[in-house]
Image 1 (cartoon, helix red, strand yellow):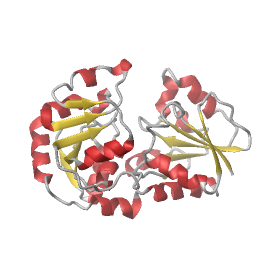
Image 2 (image 1 turned 90 degrees about the vertical axis):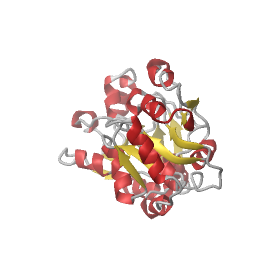
Image 3 (image 1 turned 30 degrees about the vertical axis):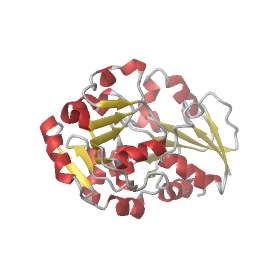
Image 4 (image 1 turned 120 degrees about the vertical axis):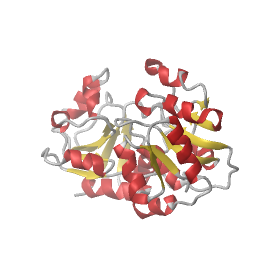
Length: 290
């Protein structure tokens, strides 16, 4: 089959794109022809379309690009990338892949076929013998819904934040100065920093997502601390037992980090049971090849 994988910015970000979806597509490339294109590039009638995007994008500055893919006559699936779910934003897709049970429950009754497809690049994100330098680490684009200033207030200089700075959302970077901050770096470097930390602390709020951050930590066998008001992240921690859920408050976060220091909470085994790139690819192929 011929597959067009569409993601706005995929060409510019290809050097940094090494997550579970990237690894899953490498598996799929062994069976099918795959082109990586931007939404404005030509898409041929015989191509199956995989579009990675948040449905609410249709209302934003990139809405016209979303609408263009949304209206294609091709057989196409939306790789759900977070945000709210409304049927009118998705009805013209033949299938929607969501990232966990929380979003799967939201999809029920909307009349759109869906399934869960998610995972981590387990070949890059894995346990390493690194000296523990940081109490907490968080890898995520600096954005309001990720709440990096809460991380910085909780951990200060014993915490490290790493992620892409956004001109249109500067406050999270500016107000996180109590912690050490790094820009976006390649996945291999992120893995080293995860392994050099006692815990990965994901301060994302309800809409904040950050599930990749959680799974990547587990793949490195590093405990995870997530917030009580973040159901998408709680889902993985509560199912696996490979971390702690705490209130989104500085003292609660500090106590949670102390409680997991030096513990093997079984995160890697959990990833290998259901969230590897092979699992991700198989879920996508089940629909692609049906």
